[in-house]
Amino acid sequence: MSDTQVLFRPITIRNTTFKNRLAMAPMTRGFSPDGVPGDNVRDYYARRAAADVGLIISEGTLVHREGAADNSNYPLFWGDKPLQGWKNVIDAVHLNDGKMAPQLWHLGMMRKPGTGHFPDAPTDGPSGITLKGKKIFEEPSISDVEAMAQAYVDAAADAVRLGFDAIEFHGAHGYLIHNFFCDVTNKRTDRFGGTLVDRARFAIDIIKETRKVVGDTPIILRWSQWHQVDYTSRLTSSLDELAPFLEAIAASGVDMLHASQRRYWEPEFPEIDGKDGLNLAGWCKKITGLPSMSVGSVGLGGDFFGAFAGEGAKTRPITDLIERMERDEFDMIAVGRALLQDPNWVTKVKEGRLDELQPYDASAIKTLY
Ligand SMILES: Cc1cc2nc3c(=O)[nH]c(=O)nc-3n(C[C@H](O)[C@H](O)[C@H](O)COP(=O)(O)O)c2cc1C
Image (cartoon, rainbow, N blue to C red; front, side, top):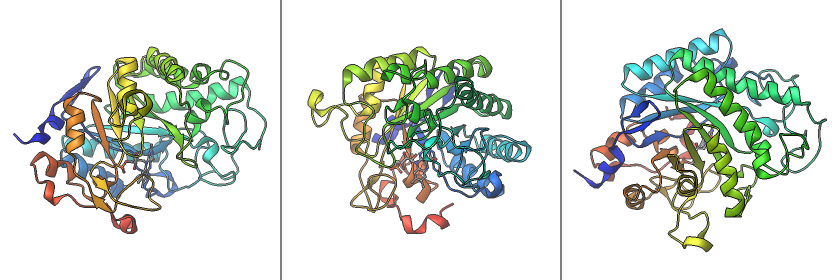
């Protein structure tokens, strides 16, 4: 057994067993014209399923709000044709012995008004305030907010109906759920606004209502401290504030917290436990006792400018990832660009062929399938 075998222990989340600890991170590709995932999308995911990925998380796919997107090549998760496309995807993943969650997404205030599948549709956000703090439309009513939440619940119900194995809600990076978490974009004074715990209410409602329609299907919430227009921003730098926020979310019945960070080896609170301290997923697990998933530059290192995440141009050993897994700091690890670059990345790790792992070539992204 090579060291990497710690990554290949099965894990059971609620009633579902995943064959290993390696997930494919959600990655938007924009290759679903008019929102319909076609055979190319099916084959792209089936290829990773066939190559040992324990849980495939789809690219962000849009819940049923017409103002959810800013690009009509992003896949919808509603309507007959898109859902048939997703049915073809999940069937192909299952045929290849894989498991998959759709990542349910709404861009919220990250959308540029006038774009997407329905350019004329209004943008959704908690208070009509952009990530930079500019008010661009009136605050929606409570019933509008409830309709936004319901769109996630409906999509989750469809996911289960199609046969998906888990659900991930995209609550990270400055998109709609994150807009509710963030005090710049959420100035509501009703039950969806207030303290950080109050601002978790939108996500909590979605998770509670989803549980009623998905039974024991695992529900994952992805979240981040930062938003994409400012990697240095944080929802909170205080553990005293973070803990009740995460506890409230855990009490909603979510099954796993997926903590998005750019480099998994970076400690969240080095002032508390030092430079090798817990990363964000580590704190999620410690605070809530729930399983957690980490992510960020797995297998990638070196300087890399303009990439979504931190690194990429060189490979980086995964020794410290193995050590963190051995310590059970977190339970799963998502791999993004390395797995985009090389569909066989997980198989190579499983077989100890670490010298065959490749760096990420962002300039080739359009050719990476
Ligand atoms: C091309 C690309 C598209 C992405 N799209 C999404 C997305 O749809 N949803 C999401 O939560 N994160 C998205 N991300 C972030 C990744 O899920 C992941 O967190 C990030 O790339 C860091 O992991 P890595 O260093 O292993 O690539 C995207 C990243 C890339 C490179």
